[in-house]
Amino acid sequence: MAARTDLFQSPDYYQVDELLTEEHKHIREAVRSYVKKEISPIIEDYAQRAEFPQHIVKQLGDLGCFGPTIPVEYGGGGLDYISYGLMMQELERGDSGVRSTASVQGSLVMFPIYAYGSEEQRKKYLPKLASGEWLGCFGLTEPNHGSDPSHMLSHYKDAGDHVVLNGAKMWISNAPYSQVAVVWAKNEQGEIHGLILERGMEGFSTPTTHGKWSLRASATGELVFDNVKVPKENILPNIKGLKGPLSCLTKARYGIAWGVIGAAMDCYDTALRYSKERIQFEKPIGSFQLQQKKLAEMITEITKAQLLNWRLGSLMNENRATPAQVSMAKRNSCDIATNICRDARQLLGGMGITGEYPVMRHMMNLESVITYEGTHDIHLLITGMDITGFNAFK
Image 1 (cartoon, rainbow, N blue to C red):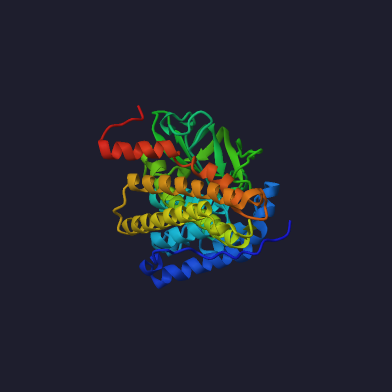
Image 2 (cartoon, rainbow, N blue to C red):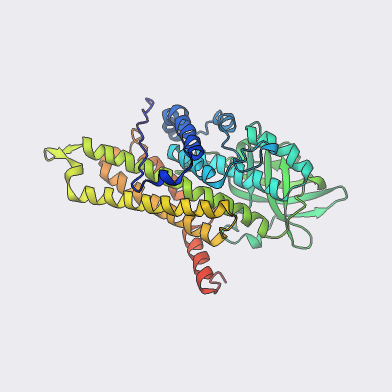
């Protein structure tokens, strides 16, 4: 497949850029340039072949996209949350799978090791994860426990200087290529703890998930634990219970809220350009009312989401954002991005289903993103519980 020329121009209908610092804009431009140069020309081909471009892991590390909010002393970027959001926006503008790789590494692997790990664990793992030398994954979801992780079956027993872990996780991004896995399992008292597993531990395997129609350029797999001996020093010492994994998901959901707007912006930009070039009935299709309606609604929803994300980023920087506020942004962004991609596909007609344009790939990817790390419906119930005080989950 011929490499696609990336002509993307970022929409900013309300001059949201004026709310950003010069550093924010510099960081965004660095990632945008990287995506145009290294991701856009190859991603359609990798998606068509359902293959993960492994070489990008080191590139993302060099660019500073792994753990950008982690302190510099551990290899992170020491940046604020708006910087992190903008990075995820630009990566997902390239492809949701690329952003997933970075989200998992930073929010789900590096964050728990930094926040809940020992100093020895931080020094051992964080610099190698930050640089991209090591890739990590996060094991929470199980074959029979997705939205309800409290009933997970993965468990471990005390065996002296180590524990013995059994169980399985599925739908794990990065799993097939990860050197490190942060896994959540129950001890003999039924308490949930985080354990750091390393590739090569006996009984630990990561079978690849095949047959996906979504996130095809992202590596997905299972984590299987068959009497895996895990040294006790690999247990995260400073957290127990569901609060641990859920706090990681809050950080990742924040990144998704920004990320999917990148996909939406790419589809809008593609549709807008196409509407001016495609001639039907002797004039550009962008001159017809129904196509203008689609484009006007796209830019309206993108603008609203940009403002929501910026405000959420400000609250995150002040350590005032609540998990429920993050849920609202994740659900809103995924919902509007999915609809924008579908409308863009319609506007492009038959060309919209081809790899010549990015729209169908984004559309398929977002069907996963709207589901993972809290489904659309679960996030609605999180907002509902937050405003009413009533728990509708049980």
